[in-house]
Length: 231
Ligand code: BT5
Image (cartoon, rainbow, N blue to C red; front, side):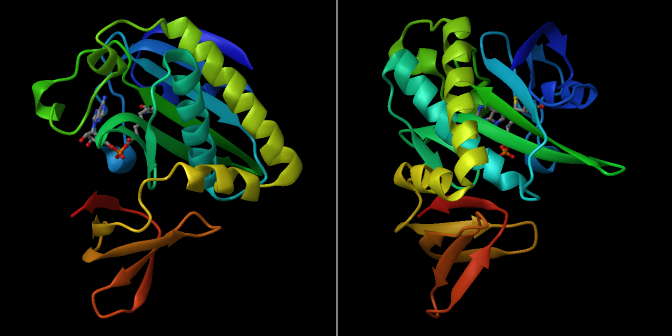
């Protein structure tokens, strides 16, 4: 993986569109960092904001989001000893506060297909007051700075290892690792999708990365996108 470092970008995911597979774009700050559905991603100096370009066989970007979540979790653990939990579909939490968000975008151009895995980790960056109740940083938790380069190196190693497994053995081993660190299953949750709001219990995460919930009327429902909140 070749690393391309920039001081400032609008978004590493946007810049990554100019690159081919196995390139990694990292920026000290982003002026227009984004989350899902064009939501704003706060990207001050001190965080790790990066995108990895891949050309996978899969049509499902969520598989790479899951892979990245496991890689980030392992890299954070190895670098700082901090334990985190994965929250469906694209977050890493520490004590219910968001430490990392992942945004995988698929780009189709003619016959070629690229996927860009965007990873944002709050490391030494300051978070705005508006996010204090739902987000945290490694610095806030450990009360000390973490070396960004060291964390990035660990992340690349973990990502490469998992990606090799993924290419050789498919998604199931990745899904199994993801499931064992996932904090969502078995919990009573509220779900907010683009179209509806639901209340139920998280039952399982499926092979296609969707979440099955049991509604109050006992019916099962598959959710493919959305935000979940524990109740
Ligand atoms: C995400 O979206 O969590 C995906 C975030 C991906 C960011 C990376 S950074 C590198 C790459 N380049 C980009 O432009 N993006 C990727 P979502 O689940 O939709 O969450 C977005 C929501 O998280 C926002 O609406 C805020 O409420 C909250 N948020 C914003 N900035 C945050 C931060 N730094 N830490 C924690 N939460 C944040």
